[in-house]
Length: 200
Length: 194
Image (cartoon, rainbow over all chains, first blue to last red):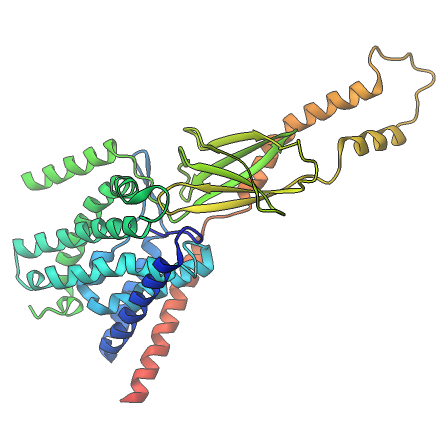
């Protein structure tokens, strides 16, 4: 999910940067004192999760957990993802500083989408919550792949080519993220409902 | 219970069928064996980058010298573009097509074959009493060099591969520390506003 430096054209970089700037500003504004630790915890989770490769099957997978971030943080996912990506870029050269805007948008926009679509469902107890949490994990990766393909549409592989490649590669991850998000949300709703912002 | 079995089966089916090439980045490293340059491209995590585009450019002029595609093991090899001896260094760029791109700077070794031969000639005194071997010294040097190149190639590969290490536990903990520190700063700022 990290696009490397030197691949994208400047209009794409600029658009990504603008979206990230706006998102981060809104995110920081909506951040109140009590939510800071939640954001930090999820930033750390995101940072660690995407560093640890789990060798399963023929390849490696690593989690992104964008859906979980979105559903818990809302607009706060922008500063969270930006921070984690910034650290990854300077520590490990994943992505890069010029593409950080695009990369943040790639992961934060779907997270935000999940927040608006699935957030109301999370408040209901029972099966609806399960399905919503699964969809959160699943669709955040799907939309991330689509946005990534859109960002790469101007390169020589083209939108459809990249979309096929990226979605095929991320298909297992969509299901895994869905399942993990589902279990995490169910666990949190039982143990620490205020973390999710739901009063049970 | 049935639903759980179904999910487990589904997960296994997906793991076994698909080939995820998820990665943060693609990396390439190159080493030489004689005049052939070998490159290996991998995604972070160790999976080879298959059918990725390789472009070789001259580091000084930026002109494209040749290009190709990696095989199923992520390998690609080419002879050093010898037609132009002014080329001192190459930039080998890999592009996996899904937004990952990286390059490796390859410098031609400064010592040319002739220099090695001359130093060998200088250092080894002419054996007078021994009978002359059935091969002359130049042939012997060339033979030794070829054997050495063959033996050195895996070591060069190892060196090139190790130049870039993957993040370890210290890096991860360091990053988490940074995040907690930033949260502390944010909390402090917000508490001042109150």
